[in-house]
Image (cartoon, rainbow, N blue to C red; front, side):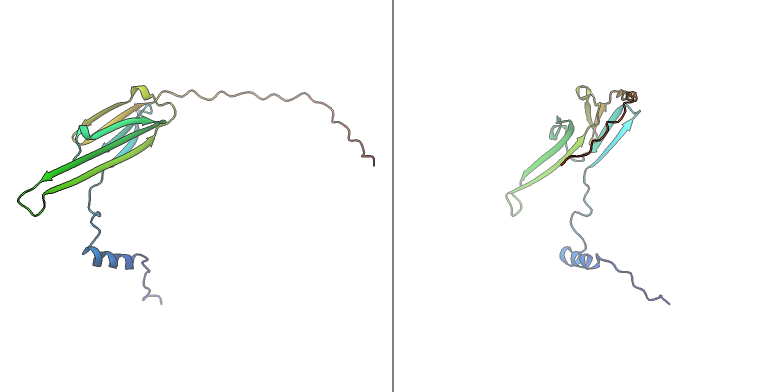
Length: 152
């Protein structure tokens, strides 16, 4: 009955344009982009792991801004080549991530370490006190105020 149904692909035309324009794909499709993992350890530590391949420790900056952890990395490369048609080749790589920290974060005890292309930032979290429950007592009973008829 419905054997010849063709599924509609809204991106088919875009894929065709992509193949024609870039001979098989967008140049950034296979690029390795830095990844960031944010997780908790033992419910009292927040861990932020950022994989920054190709960056050195001097290229990375970790700071606090209005209750958020800010990780920035920027690398500039400049090569002068005399054997080719160009004189100089420059490239820049950068990364920026802003992570809002949870309530109770101990910002004075944040630690960061960088090893084998991975930046690991640990944020201790202080135990948050439970909210205090306030007992509601009933108001004393008072008789309702009689409504007087309006006089005109």
